[in-house]
Image (cartoon, rainbow, N blue to C red; front, side, top):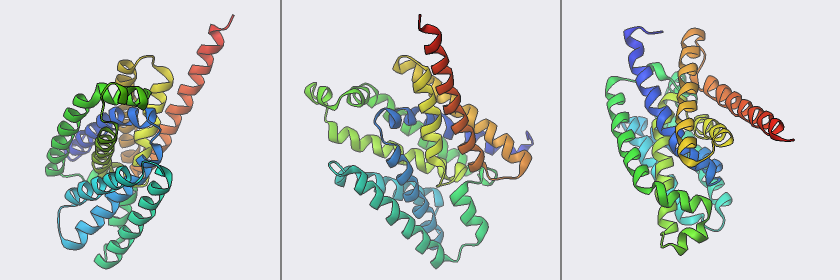
Length: 265
């Protein structure tokens, strides 16, 4: 589990977990779980397209995920669910077409859909680290206005916050997070990491600062446990991420109910 070839897996998993937990907290606060599910499919299509033309899969992930996010932000202001659903099916269709045209073999398809953390190279870890630093810097810059807008867009707009531009920026952050997570977790279960642990943290923690720290910690615990389980069992890491994320949320809800029960006279 701690052999030299596993170093890249632990590093990549750690980077993905921290940024997914932080960005995922606002996914939960802003009720954007559906977008967090649809955008990774744009990343999946980008990786498949990059395979077709012989380009970097990480570049394809970022470009297509950001394009999907900007499309949802531009067209989905009033009919957000409809536009998000159309983005979902369009990107899945493109991904399937790109894979069919490229003739990618089955293990490559499984890696895109369900994750293959053991296949992450040192160069990809460096690229992931640069993307995490960039996403973290943007999140720090927009943290306060994003918090205001998450609580009440009307109040945020009254205080001079450009709500539409902020929403587009946030969706780009979600897209970058998805692009980071797809090589590790897979396109189909990336949203589990950006929703499960942050939702558990939001249930348990009082205050945005504590919720942010707890979301990152729970996401990290989820990914580390999933890597260990995938190594020991040989099963896809995406399965374990989805299972552990669900367990964290259910446990958080149970703990919250128990705490509320004790607080009643």
